[in-house]
Image (cartoon, rainbow, N blue to C red; front, side, top):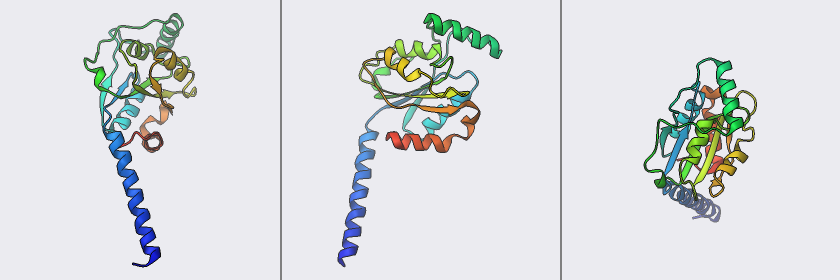
Length: 187
């Protein structure tokens, strides 16, 4: 074999070996995509993450639904966030301990996570878990949600989040895949 061909073959083998090691490292982790969605935008992004990861999907649902009118929702959300209110959840997980990585999805309400997501985060022992937030928003991007999550879960590892404009959720697959690859969290 010519030296240049041997060098190229070795480089290809090395690259393939590195990719396999990365896949093996990520495949051993149990992944959950947990999300709260009011309008369906956050659900759309959660479904995209679920589609491109080996994960389970879990919808965070409060016992008392939010109003359907936009103005009423924003007023209620503001009061709940300002008071630190944590609504009771209708849906629960019995086996949160099995997950190593938890994607946390929320609409960005008043610059932070929605109260049902705060209830989820404080309702389980997430010490040692890797939390990966994603937010749908109308212009505020991640707001201060990452620092708020860090305060709620100080003993968890927090990865950089993904903000997706709510109106662009249905066409965000390429952006989601790019983010997952950069984070090392794709299949």
